[in-house]
Amino acid sequence: MPVPRPTRSRNKCGGNLKHDDITRLLRASRDGDAAALDELLPLVYQELRRGARRAALTVRVTLRSAMTLDPALDAEVRSLVDEYRERCLWFVRSDYYPSTPDEILRVLRWIRARGDREAFQRAGKIEEWLSRTSSEKSAAS
Image 1 (tube, rainbow, N blue to C red):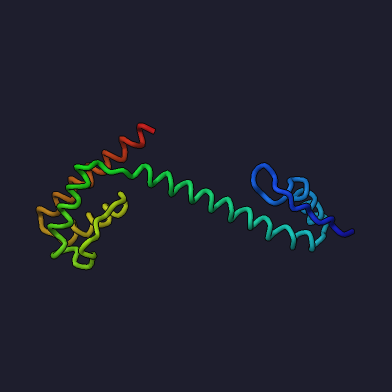
Image 2: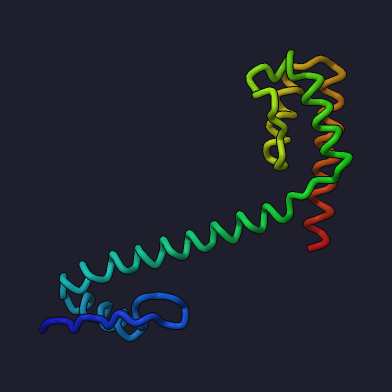
């Protein structure tokens, strides 16, 4: 028995299929209709990709809004990067300054690993400052 083609109307969630159509394809597939499964899988993957894109965009927007650095912290990071650019950060562009907490932590690890004792201590203090700032923001939300 051939499976009726699903209608391509948009539901309130933004998908291209109605729940009844998906249910009908699932039942037909369970009953052994390979054509129904062949039609259903690309639709399921399309919806999964759409959901993943939406979730990734939400995470990116949330992270960007949460990444406002304390101006004093930003100034200290810039000062440290400028001071150790020649010795430990020679591979970094001359106009590059880390802007996200992950980038800052990566640069601080390079400075701590390849700098002198003072660089190690300053980078450690900035890491503590950064972890305090991020934990205060997460506690406030």
